[in-house]
Amino acid sequence: MNTTEYITHSADETIALGRELAAKLHDLRMVILHGDLGAGKTTLVKGIAEGIEAASQDDVTSPTFTLIHEYRGPDVTLYHVDLYRIDTERELATLGLDELCASEGSLVVIEWGEKFPRLLAECDAEIRIERVGEMERKVTVVKGR
Ligand code: ADP
Ligand code: MG
Image (cartoon, rainbow, N blue to C red; front, side, top):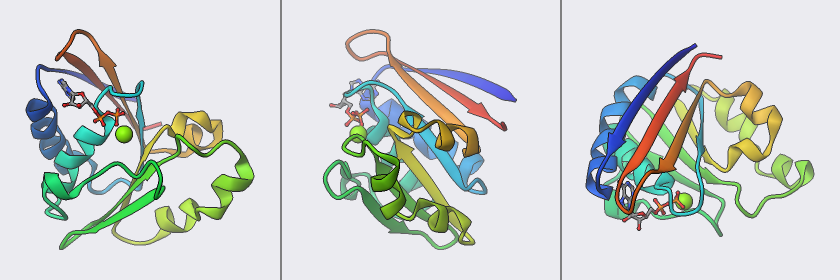
């Protein structure tokens, strides 16, 4: 297990961190983003999507209602998932996340994935985002479980 901490001071800095992290995450299958509403999870995904050249930051919007957004990059396809509105294992199963994670070249990044202990146990990395101040965020990346 390997833990790295970062501090960002603006949404732009969090996007830049996402771009940087993309290089470290691109060969993983499942990453859980853990943090309160407004912490900056979706903001970080904007950077990850840019880092793998799958989308520009303005094209990445919250999948709160649509549940899954897909962004195809040259090497990696990013699936951005939001489980905020998903409450049961049965609803979770209908999303087919296992199939997405199993497919070659896919990176599945899940907001609110920690709601399901099974996903936490299966994921390759967990990224925790905490609000430290108005604009300050602590981003903790825990890899390898
Ligand atoms: P989440 O997906 O965790 O609910 P969002 O990324 O949608 O959160 O929203 C984060 C909000 O916080 C945005 O309005 C963003 O502009 C603001 N913000 C302020 N400072 C930061 C920061 N350092 N990192 C990320 N977002 C920040
Ligand atoms: Mg979000």
